[in-house]
Image 1 (cartoon, one colour):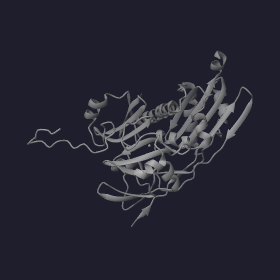
Image 2 (tube, rainbow, N blue to C red; image 1 turned 90 degrees about the vertical axis):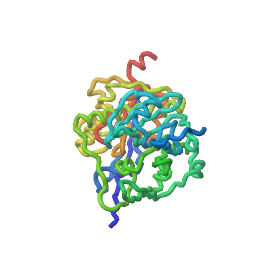
Image 3 (cartoon, rainbow, N blue to C red; image 1 turned 60 degrees about the horizontal axis):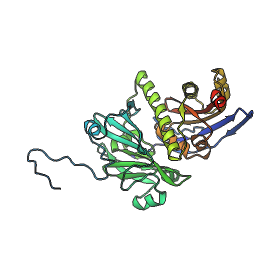
Image 4 (spheres, rainbow, N blue to C red; image 1 turned 135 degrees about the vertical axis):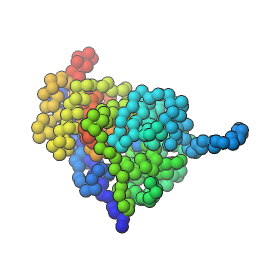
Length: 363
């Protein structure tokens, strides 16, 4: 018997305070994007030359379409030999660790490693070095190379599955087969160009389930992490959101944001407040508005802004969601804000943008 998993609606929110002129403006926009969460219930939420023969050992088969020599299934030792050690390793919510390689020569890379093997790969920036996939390529051009469909059949763990993509999914983040796995192509729909790519093997794709799915039997579930690991997952997601935001800004010839620890703490507490009190809004029933939260922490500022998101598979996916919402891409690509703090609790994500008051005085 086939079973349809109904997905969570994702709604994003953004707000900006212009304190210097004592004017408050708020931009509310609803973006309905679907993703898989732990529950199967539908919820509504508000606001990636010839070689000598070897007789006793078969040669390693490298799949076509490798990504700068990296491919799904390669060992972590081979990865290190190829690109070196990562700058940090962040645990994910899905059992693998993200190996983070910051932007170099226009490329930012996160490699997911589990049991000493590559299971997923996230690439963004301005240059990927791929033959068929180039960041900045148009949707129509890639649509001639790949087939973008509302239904994608695949096999994992010896079973057959079918993902169902909405029309919005097909436009913003189509799923295609690539090499020995799958690729989620994230597009910037405002520029109609490829923004980032997430490669996954079948098992990891099934575990994350970023689209609705038709299946038989049981679906695999990831192990609930310990509180200590969960905290590291949240911290990793926050840093990844910050990193990817600056990669996107670099692509648009904008200066990088500076990390603001005080703003990050305010952002974290708001994400936690939303999760624990089961609401989704810039206005908290306990801490009030964004401006109130900063003033309560005695943080002086000239200008504030906030983006929030919930129930994306991870922070990288949330950034692509913000990028594809008119109101939320404004602070992402602002030439006025100078600092950014990010806070993540479970699957609630908050960005707090600001111009500190002392920054204003220096200018």
